[in-house]
Image (cartoon, rainbow, N blue to C red; front, side, top):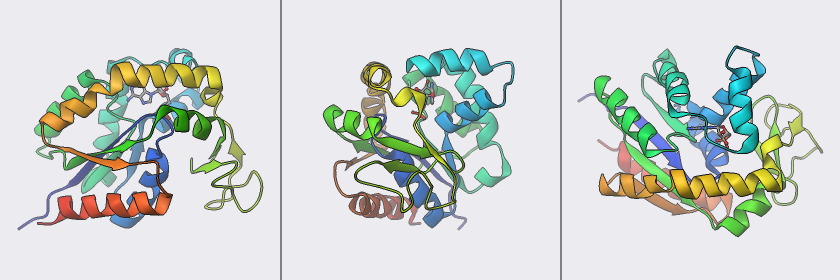
Length: 223
Ligand code: AMP
């Protein structure tokens, strides 16, 4: 019997730890991490014709319109490295995006394996995001107090320089959390109804959360 693809979604508010967990999961299961935030930031830096348009949404902490994100996302999952599966981090963020993804996967005969939702209370998220620093090369995430790099300002994984995202300011964070509750959290219900949702408590030690996520993936991945 041929093994099915491992098509995963990490769902959760900004700062829940989706990116941090995703980095470890993709190393273990050899599937690519697809972060629509990273894809969008790369498009902005490329200075393409879309740059200015994307920037205005992102700097305000608002969602980029569905069609724009979908075009970028679908082109990415059609690349050769996604043939055995992928991990979506930060997508879908609206019910409309989830429905379009479902159609696209159906067309490709490559259904979703499961959605891991990482739950963290808002007050914890704000503290995490304001102290977050990101690697400019590999986008690994650090925290000024709880997950310090060995050398100040330098990424442990790849030696890249760490920076603070512009949208990790307190003002923009407020809006990103509001947008999450209004537009993205309905996806919890959406995937629960499809019996595809696997919640984990994201307010624990990183290693413990990772173990829980691996247990879920191993169950989804068993023949
Ligand atoms: P993230 O890195 O996931 O926090 O995303 C950063 C920003 O990129 C978000 O605040 C949005 O402006 C935009 N973005 C990322 N993913 C999506 C998505 N799936 N739909 C709409 N906008 C997105």
